[in-house]
Image (tube, rainbow, N blue to C red; front, side, top):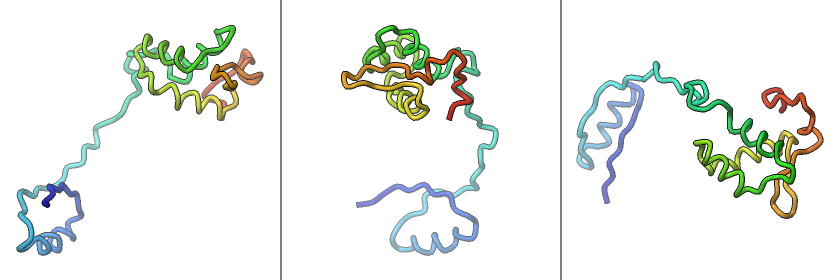
Length: 126
């Protein structure tokens, strides 16, 4: 069995690696690696695509619901808001860790006393 490998190594390792390949492999190409330092990851909200973070959206949905929200209802709401429904689980975990929401035995998410406070700033809560 053979593998195709792409490596980024310091200059000092180029010689020893090519020596290891002698008789065993073929060096197809080798070129200097250029780091893409200009690439930045920008939150979609900052690009104008979304107005609130996933935490904000999920917390708002649970908070505005009288009877709480199930995981399926949150996933549907995320989908309708143009977000990935799979991200509901990690978001609810973060909110639970911050003690803003809780999940009962029927898998319904509800706001805790801490979350019910009107002045909750999600960025300040840890």
